Length: 322
Image: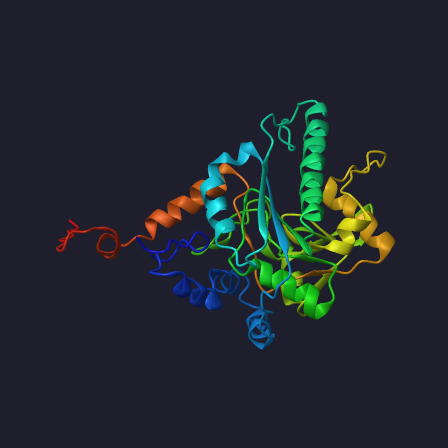
């Protein structure tokens, strides 16, 4: 069986992992965003002119996977992406699952606020379990990867480059609200103007009144992009940050940010540097609709005869369309 690419479903299965890595040099993200924003060709030039990523080195990283059961639909793809991350041999993948989950954070209209509070409490406990594990492992970094994100294999090297070469204390790979279609670009489902699509989740400004970063503006910034605070979807946190503060929620603030926004308060307090790699966007299957679209395009991309030749033991094929 060929090496199946979990991140770029528009391609047939690769024969080996090396061909997959070569494919990443011209990944779907470049094609998609030049298609979505045809006037930002400088983005492609910026990617080409940037220095290569740093080597893995010998630093130890704890890759934390705080799995959320309501994201069961994407569990297989998530695990495939995690399994193919390039990390050092003595690093650890820490998978933690809450067997008694609280209601989803985003409650339906008319639901009580109690479910949202319970959800935030569960997220807080899960994130601190990840922090405690990284410290107990004597890890140099904690890499957080949320359940519905599919990071590329070089995600850790991208994040480490921001820390090692550019002095980031916290490094972040960005993503958008919805699935990135290799055919149609970003699925702008909630805004009439693509240039106003917000970046998820990173902010400028001061806590707690962070300001939105528009995706187009973010992409054309110089590399790396500096932000005031970021989410924990695909994020690398240095040990000095982990040792200084646990994850927390500012329960007393009118704008009750979850652990990511509350971390922004400490970033401002201690003067930590937060950088983002704006040369790539991580695939985000945030809901069942995004996942179904992802699978539909994956299946539609399979050419019948080449697919059968890769996967079948038969020697002869006759494909007829009438």
